[in-house]
Length: 157
Image 1 (cartoon, rainbow, N blue to C red):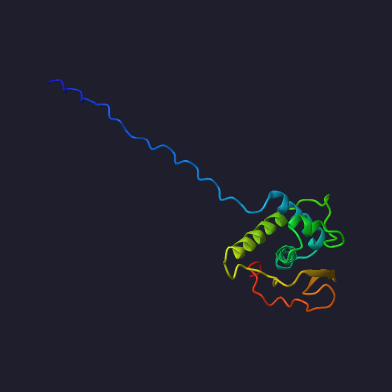
Image 2: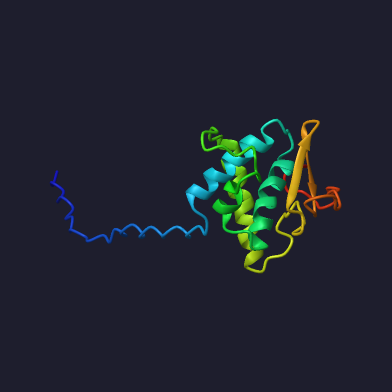
């Protein structure tokens, strides 16, 4: 029986694709400090509130004041006698952080020209007070109209 010749194996260069460079994350227009500040404000102003819509409205209230020239987020939240629930020593709650980031993303989308971003509080509502376990939002410091929750909420099903 004749011996079979071994197959000849030639070296073949295989192009191994190099990994794609990681895309730089889209820069967020807000800072971590602003998110923490808003979350600490929410903890003090709305921690007993079960509705994410109502919690989001507290953040929109801050952002409405920013839009009306009351200062940046830090100045608005820390202004004396304004958001009295805010305390530097308030804990940082992950759910509140997530909610604050969501509202900030919607606010900046609105600034970029998007409509129907999921705003839950009209732009002229800049004040609220709490009683009976809820916050009640107004479009005037004293008196004014009380918000009726007529905007659709992205937080409630």
